[in-house]
Image 1 (cartoon, each protein chain N blue to C red):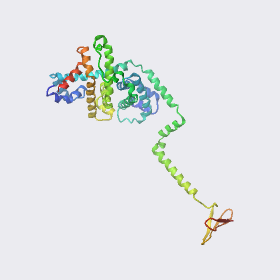
Image 2: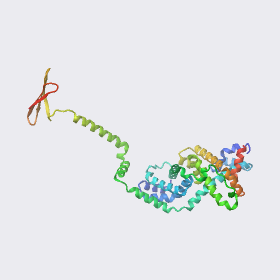
Image 3: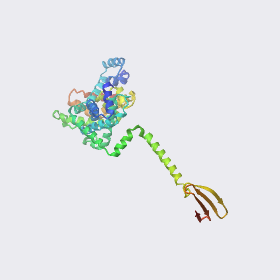
Image 4: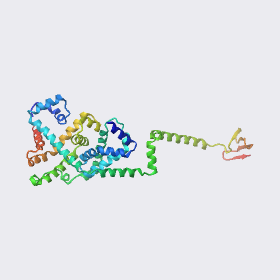
Amino acid sequence: MTNSCSSVSTVLEKYFDQEVTDEERFLVEGHLQDCQACRDVLKSMEELRTLVRVPVEEAVRNEDFPWVWQKIEREIRLQEKRTWWQSLRSWLDITPFFKKKVWIPALATVVVLLLITTQIILKKTPSYPDASVVEYVESQNDNVMVYQLEEPKVTVIWLFEGPEEERTTI
Amino acid sequence: MNREEDEIISRCQQGDQQALKEIFDKYHKKVYGIAYGVVRQREEALDVVQEVFLKLFRSIKNFKGRSHFYTYLYRMVMNTAIDHKRKAGKQFMSSLDEEGSFEPSEEAEKGPERILLQKELEERVRLAIDKLPDEQRAALIFRDVEGLSYQEMAEAMGCSIGTVMSRLHYGRKRMQESLKDYVKLHARSHGASAAEGLGQADKEGEGR
């Protein structure tokens, strides 16, 4: 290689791959006329390309492809026979409304609302539905609570005699 | 992408199996070529072809047309083939590889043994390709087997043209290093073979 090889070496591979500009091609071809070493480098790249490509071309030429398509077709048919759960998942995936970005927050909201509602419902409420407290009297020993129901007309007097005992009179 | 192909892709995106068949008819040889270039085994390459078209049928709805369809497809083939290769692991390792390095037999240098030599050469090339890092292997196959331009390679590999050139350059360099012993022998046994270039260039390189 000569000194001028270094100026060509950066574009020699581009030249080999036919990716040079006209100006670069002119430069490389001018240099190649006088440089055996660079011609050999090009030759070696060509040989390498042949070594890599020829077996692939032969393999493609010798292959019979129709049966490959038949296998693909058969596989697609098999995949179409899916379980109801797979179908549901696939449906959820393709239906925009049920895209994960939508249904996960929606589901989370519903769960939170349910939890809050359940808490409210399960909170200790008076044993008598629709009753309203009319009066509540506290003393040092006993407490009295008076309820009144609308339908049927019933009055409930709830007497708390101590921390452990309680008695109801209707 | 031409209008006819656009229309086929659009039909395929809607689940039309016939459209997939049309894509298969157009691209199966290229797909097989890339797959074979990577795995270098007929059965494995055919498995890759099958897997790629099934994958394509499932995921083509994700193709938005921002790149050429064939670069999208080639990238899928390359990734699938590399995955296959990784999964297969040691199954691919041949007896030659187990021996560590390749030493052509003296017999192979004689004329009548040329077929054997050819087989050994193919095996040697396969091993050399196996040793390349994935990106360099992809660059070499896209360029030297499929003849893609740097621009098309950059699209298929999702990188810049500069990166493509670098991968190609180092891939070729490694290949030349891996094959230099063989190429010297090849040159002797085939007279003025073009293969001489590899060995000679290597000598020149050593002298520099």
